[in-house]
Structures are given as C-alpha cells and as structure tokens.
Image (cartoon, rainbow, N blue to C red; front, side):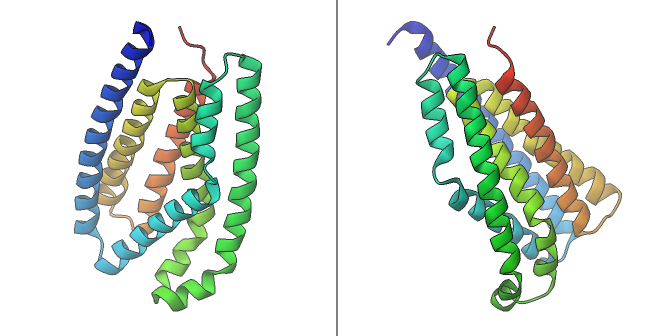
Length: 205
C-alpha cells in the first residue's frame, strides 16, 4: 500500500473519531435540554419516532450503503461513478416510498401496540424524517466511496451541531411544543444533506 492511501486512511479515521466524540457530546446536551422542557410521555413518543425512522432506514436500505461505497471506490471512471450514484438514489427513493406507505398503513396497529395517540399523531412526520435521514445515510456512503472522510465528519458535526442550536432556539427560547422539536431535526438533517450532496459532486483538488 502506497503512502498516500495510508495517510488518507489515518486522517479519515481521526476526522471520524473526532466528529463522533463531539457528536455524542452535542446529542447528550440536546437530550438534557429536551428532557427539561418536555414530559416523559412526549419525550418517549419522540424517541420512539426516531427509533422507528432509524429502523425503517436500516431495513429498507438492503445493504445499499455498504455496496455503493464499495463499488464507487472500486472504479476510477467518473461516468460510471455518476451512474452508480444515480441508480442508488433512484432505488433508495423507491424503497422510501414503499416503506413509508407500509408504515402509514400500519398506524392503527401502532396505537394498539404502544398505546397513546401522541405517537400515532407524530407518524404524520415519519415520511419526511424517513426521507431526510435515509438520504443523509446514502450521501454519507457516497462520500465514503470517494474517500472524503473529512466531509463525512463535517456532515455529522453539522447535523448534530445544527440540531442542538435549533433545539436551543426553537424549544428552549421560543418554548414550542414537540412539533418544534421535530422541525429542528428536519431542518438540521436537510441542511446536512445539502452539504453532503454538494461535497459528493465537487471534484477533489
């Protein structure tokens, strides 16, 4: 293995490790703020929604993230890379639509399973959060395939940092309800998706 790939791997590992540590700290701080402003029922419903979104993202991906990263890193042909990314995006959107419909249909059973109407009401936002979180995961896999580990780290930091800032502004300052909490997460992930997409399209200098 040549020196350049080794150096890139070490730098990427340091970037990701630092971003992960800071991300955990910011997530913990955000959780502390949320738990001080919402009841246990509201916080529990929001947490279950996030868990369900993440579960759907894992199940519906069919290992696409690991596959696309492997195939992109295995070719130097830019046209083939773009074709792989386009195919992955189309496939991901199809699975997101199908699984969102399935989740919507099962809303009445979720009410019986978990109890309470709040969680079922929050599932109105599930397709949007599912789309954003899944898109961010796919774009991170694309960045991994082109070996832009620093951009992955920045994306993770941006997601957690923006989410924390928006929680402080929307929840702690403006005293909004749980809808503001969901909006804060959606905006943070959306802006991170934009950054990841631009990073994946820009040429390495």
